[in-house]
Length: 103
Ligand SMILES: [Zn+2]
Image 1 (cartoon, protein in one colour):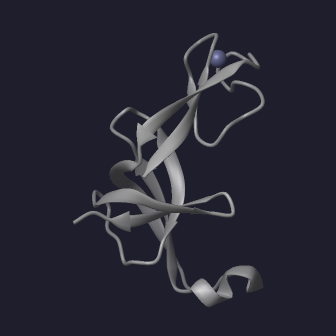
Image 2 (image 1 turned 90 degrees about the vertical axis):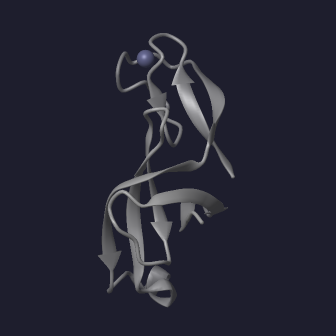
């Protein structure tokens, strides 16, 4: 599944998800580009105790995924995961990026 990256029209800085102001140059004009939603796990944390809202999902993992194009995206996974695992975007749920292991 592809994901949208917001690219600053002034300096080319990329953001996931969208921002109102570029954190690099403070410009406000962005264009949207698509990326393959596949990358490697930079780091993760296992959530055993969550807020009531996410209790039914526990345990789950919050992952930070590096895309090969340089962007970094925060998502959630149900499967056990390790650093450097290759993962891909499986779904979007209420604005959250849901990843799964590849292969
Ligand atoms: Zn910028």
